[in-house]
Image (tube, rainbow, N blue to C red):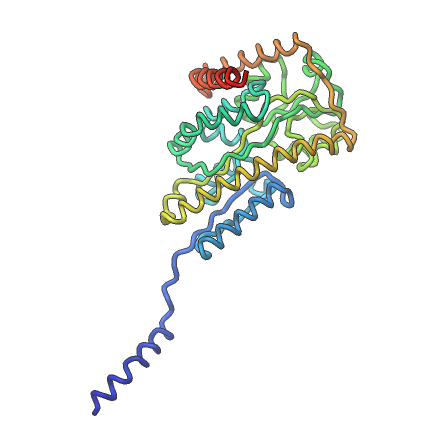
Length: 342
């Protein structure tokens, strides 16, 4: 009789123990993610949506904590914080990419691509090598959201290369590509962190009067409020990347690795789509704000710019920043694409 009573109590004891003992929750992961992109922009809204998707599809196991608008500093600062594990990921422009895997910046060589069809085709053909280059340096490349075609913006008119040489042009401090191009063009730029650009443009006797950015970037960062002119012909198609440290990525379970890779790539493609749309719109908005687009190149100037580009490529090859084989590979793929189109 006693045994029978004891057996009937066992289910109730088990229920009591389950209720009294805290359940072992699955491990959660927080990806601290930084970007220069200002908050409340279309691009940052996509990042926010990506964050929600990660949390929802992982059932709260993977969360994205976003630091927009340069609150974590310039891209070299963000890179240092990732390597010291204060951050785990970021949206880097070509400048930051060059501090991880410099050869990838062959896609940002000035006056190389005439349109996004060309840049897309070349990128797709070399992306496997770029992804491996990131891995070899401790990063996982999630996506490739481009910044868009970069233009010169200035307080003073620019109608020729000779006129450009008289301007006080900002150079993103420590950028080997910018330094090589400026040297080849005979320009003496003013090196500054991107965090100091707006302040120097605003100052009555600031050190710079000319900058470069995409049309959307010039608007989003409010640089356009201090400028009056822009170059009609863009310099290059600015690249970008969504990256996460491999140290963080390798800690994730396989299902979360797949989730962040797949969703990150989709978010990057969405930024690309919006970037191309918004950069076109931004040109019109800049014109409406009073910015005048100048400098339609002559054939002679076009040829001169190509010679400057090739000299810069030679300098970058000699320094090892972008070895010559990468430039030759990209130009060969580009020529094939143009022949196919013709």
